Image (cartoon, rainbow, N blue to C red):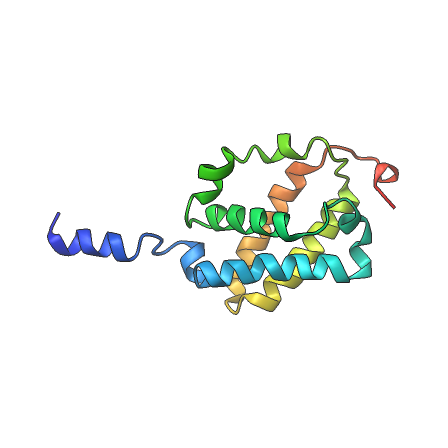
Length: 146
């Protein structure tokens, strides 16, 4: 391992990750903010918005930290909050297929508004859809808020 390889690792720690391909910190922050901007203004996702704590500042930041880590960027989320345990963290909420679709609706709109690489956007959305499906803990859409 030469000196040059050590230098490269320090200057590009997230090289070739979705985090880096999206544009790093600022791009991921923009994606997270876009997601919550859509959620808070689009009437199509009123049920999803209703179940989120207001103001959205704290959850926006937490989501940005999680996305950064999930995309291969800094592990600040784990350092501050521990292992994500997403399903366990969401068990106190009734997550129905309809709410999952509302979440994905926001994410698709945010992704296509923020990410210019369509192949990357589609790949990330496929992975996020699988993750969102894993969060479903009730098949009864009548349990959803609204």
